[in-house]
Image (cartoon, rainbow, N blue to C red; front, top):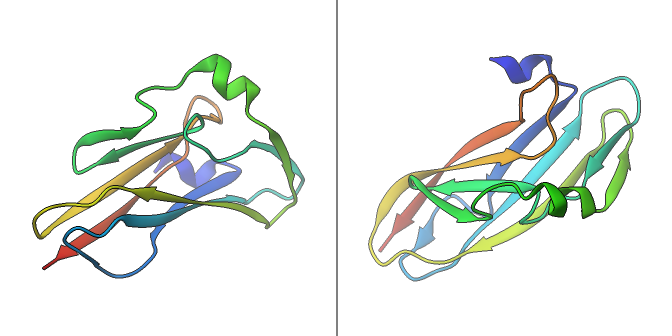
Length: 122
């Protein structure tokens, strides 16, 4: 897994174990500096994080280079993280699916990414 060698790690955490039909899906994205020195990260937002929900794009459809460049830079110390909560729409029937997220900042050509399972119940 290429991210193993990246100086940063991305994680996605749903706000709870399951969501009810019709309930908005809340989740957090966490980006952690795994290196031994300070790094510059771009803030986490709809321009710097791309999502796929249940096989369909959600939020930014693609990275807009200009918007990513304009995103605020944040200095993140070794071992520290930045976090951003996102709220997606609801589903009309019970199901289980995956959220895939990818961050615009590359390391040696690899974008950090993460996956998380979401459960929708009646």
